[in-house]
Each structure stands twice: as C-alpha cells, then as structure tokens.
Length: 274
Image 1 (cartoon, rainbow, N blue to C red):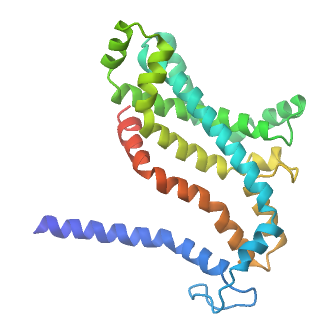
Image 2 (cartoon, helix red, strand yellow):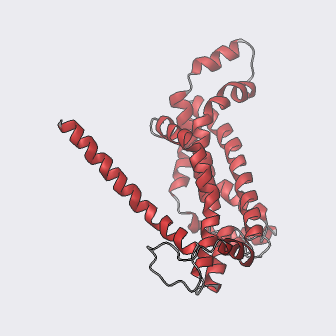
C-alpha cells in the first residue's frame, strides 16, 4: 500500500513538472495566434485566430533563407560528426594503449574548456583564411566544438555494449578493420547515433554565440541571428515574433519525437556505463 502511494506521489510530481515545462509553449502558441491589437491576458486563448501571423513572420523575417542556411549547416555538421566521431572512437575504445588513453582523456579535457575562450584567435584565423560569412566556417566550427563529446559517447557505447567476439569472428573470416566497422559495428550504433544526432542538431540549430560573429551577412544568417534581428525590429509586434520563434523550434521538436526512443537507449547504455 505504501509503495502504491509513493508511486502515485512520484507520478503526480512528474505530471506537475511536465506541465510547468509546457507553460512557456502554451504562452508562445497563444501569443502567435493573436492579433496585434489583442491585449488580453497571455493565459487566454485568442479572441480572433490569426493564422496569417505565420505567413507574415515568414516573409518579414526572411525565414526561408535562414531555414535553408540552418538546415544545411546542421545536416552537414551532424553527418560529419557521426562519421568522424564513430571512426575516431572505435580504435580508442578497442585498442587499450597508452597513446589512445592519452588521446581519449585529451578529448575529455577539451570538453571542459568554455568555447568562448577561443573566440578571439578563432575569429582572427577565420578572417585570415577568408571564411567569414560562409556556411563552411559554421560547419567546421560546430564539427570542432562537438567532436570531443561525440567521440566520448561513441567510445563509451562501443566499450559497454558491443561484444568483441563479433569482431573477432569477422577477423577469422578474413574481414579487414574498416569492413568490420562499417558492416558489423556501425549498424549496432543506432541508439548512440540517435543520441549524438539529437544533441548535436539541437545545439547547432540553436547556436547563436558563434553565428552572430561569423555569419553577419543576411544571405548566410542562421535562424537564431535572423530571429534576434527580427525581435529587435518588431518589439511592438510580439505576435509575429512568437510565430517566427514557434516555426523555428518545430524541426528539432519533430526530430526529438521521432528519435526519443533511441535517444534514451543510447544515453542509458552508452554514456552511463562507459
């Protein structure tokens, strides 16, 4: 009886916490659907449902260009992270040498360094290389920023989840290292790949601190920079700002909903045990 009461208590607490997290989204949705002259409480539903706010926000904030830039940068950077991160993590997880241990802990140490501490030399390097206002600099920057975490997650998952016997059997059959990795190991990395995909995509999609410095040209601006500019110019039209913000968050929300099962499995079996 006592166990049932405790279970109900924890369930109630979880529901309350979930509802608290949903409050900002509720306010965002109601604000995005209100008319500009609707000054009713933010807790009330709109008296007039203005679906055209989304069209106006899309056009006025140039969200089409921003969506394209953000999608390209996020997709390319995430794909490179998965390929390079998994390839780098495999030997670090399987070959227990002193050099590999040093490299592995070096990656972990890099994760502790705040990214903004490298901003000044990074900015100078980007200017010298002529990469300012290019999508390439955003891809390379995000690749460098998230590669240590990606390697850490993949290495932990490989060590704790994938048995060495599978690879040893393939070696006996004459398979090479790359063939073993791509045909046997990589297909088994689906849970942790989903975890890497969600974490990297969410942070790259929402990156502002580096995008504001390196992507100042309107033709290459990402969503965060475009939304920041749009917000500054439309403080009196919060309905349009809310509509723009709502559209910008939908892709990552949908991605998480599709991959949440693998995301939880990857975290629990890889990063926790590894």
